[in-house]
Image 1 (cartoon, chains in turn brown, yellow):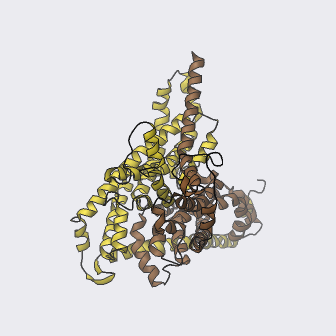
Image 2 (cartoon, each protein chain N blue to C red; image 1 turned 180 degrees about the vertical axis):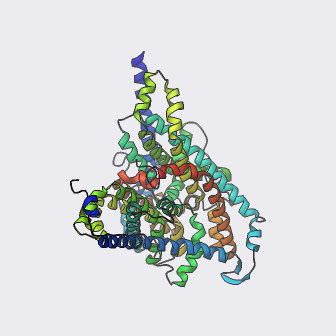
Image 3 (tube, rainbow over the protein chains, first blue to last red; image 1 turned 90 degrees about the vertical axis):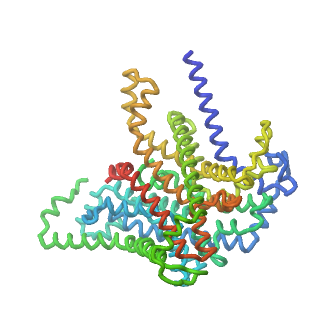
Length: 280
Length: 309
């Protein structure tokens, strides 16, 4: 009796796990499948390349030789790296201050909450001021403009994740350096930073992924030279049709970089997503 | 740590200690200053600018003149806006209900299963970080009515195809489903992390006392998970109100205005009709709605942040 119920339980676990995997992975596989099918095979119910249909790399080749796509990939890369680096720089400094020093008015908790609250604002509120501001600064349709904006919206992640990292570094290590005559700046850069290097890398990666995926500001502030990947998919007329093969290639080109990045930062994802409330 | 620093520091001459304190003060501001200034420049200043803009009327992007609260008065007589607000509320309620139920249910069900858990966690991160716009376009091919995989599957089971994107009500369902695909893993991941943080001793004790599985859930898991449930609810609520990418890419707000969410309406007011003043007023209304809801919830979530201070 006990045995059968355990068996049943394990069976159920197995089924649920498989369903979950299927649910999560099917759309990715579907995009991949479409991207390597010849147009005439698109609507055939065939699922296994080589066995059921002859795969082709023609769509990948043609998409990757389109100047607009290459340009958008480059823009997306520059925006992500620029914004993440800037956010990490500003955020790490602030995080160290919040983790190591006492602020009285306002208190550390209040400052932290204030940083988190940036994530609450609906971004559409900022479309008008950013549009007018960027027009004033002549930064419309520029990579720099999007770097500044994405750095702003990923800064809270950097502050929160890094301040937790710093709290985990024992204070005694630094105090030892101070006794030896090091200044705060020296102990920070030569004692603490190396210890939190993995956290720094993960934060950088998470900020990059979020910046890569940003769409609203990219759409409202670019029209040609600074257009990143999310906007180029949205702008291409043939994406919204039955040319599944193009959709497959573009969709994968857009979403593979951030998903792969996220996998690299796996250990820090829960921290990041909950804005530091849970360590995961 | 053999070199505990307290003693030698206490022995420092007073002048040196005062110098150290001053250095600390300076370093503190030096470290936090740039980030604070940055946020002030890029969020507080724009917010003030939005409020300022909302008091002016614009035509085709040209500022005409000060109109007081006229833009705000317009909000409440604009049927399209109110309809889009209703659409957004349906989206928020629908996605939150489905995602929380599914995500929590899965986390509870799988939390004791050790095998495959890491693999599941890895799989769960994929949708969360997939570019939402790309997911929306992928959705078009998935929901494709004549020959897409979803309708084909339904037909295989003997049903008839569903007008996923051409029927107004189904289109909203599709938008909700895509969001559910993307964000249920998020609820799952966080709930799982929360469940794993619960003290195992309590369960051992309960089992010794003969508590049933349901009793353990009712008297241990549920009360202890409460702050985390509120956290998930809070984070999803805030994000759901921001919804823009998926309706734009999947349905472009259509058919008609069936899936035109609040942010999309504001975006169109601003950048298709160049009515900056009115769009600014719309943004402020949305901000007020979100802030009101957040202020109701945040006190319950704060505990989680303060535990770490």
